[in-house]
Length: 283
Ligand SMILES: [Zn+2]
Image (tube, rainbow, N blue to C red; front, side, top):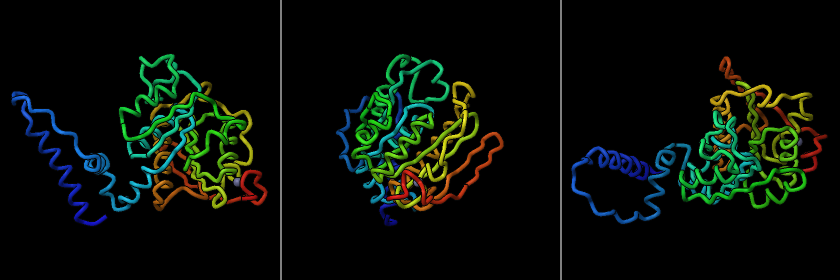
């Protein structure tokens, strides 16, 4: 982005602040302003990321053209979907077959108490529509499995797996490898989590890094999870999704990040493709 463009955006942000400060509660009611042209509105909405040296209008356009499938509208899916909608991803598919339960609300920030009993996919879509009406949000009240994965993934430029079971995780990895769709995997439990970016056929896939699920893996229902820990891991997952969509440097490829928030440890573990990987060896 040129310096003049960056200065324009900064001036724009400053003028909004000045107008807000100058407004008086006793001032005569002003006539309703004319709707701003879409381009100006978009520039203002995304101004704080457009001024970043690593971001650009080309990156913003790439995001607007992108279709992203978010699998799960829970603890990880909430921050992922909110940040991707806020950043301006063009189309967001939200896949979840559960209803909102009271035990979800301490960590699943897209759902509020009045949403109890509603399908999570629809509850999430409603909030995301308020957050950014420019984003086309499509709710899918269904659980992804090996049988329907290919159909759900069709047309997606990126998949973000926010599911909570190893069975789903491996099904998603296999389907993304088969369709060569980039994938961001993650999991969280207690105060620990893991994030991994995958470009099928180019970098290690989830099964390359973890050939088999751990035996007797606990779940959030039995082992518990702290809401902010899920928020941190989901935010990292959203960040990796933005890096892959916009082609930024520093993506977590051929590596995964192990996060332990009990003692604030972040460990980047290098991994590589396996010649015998059943999901990606033949790509
Ligand atoms: Zn693999």
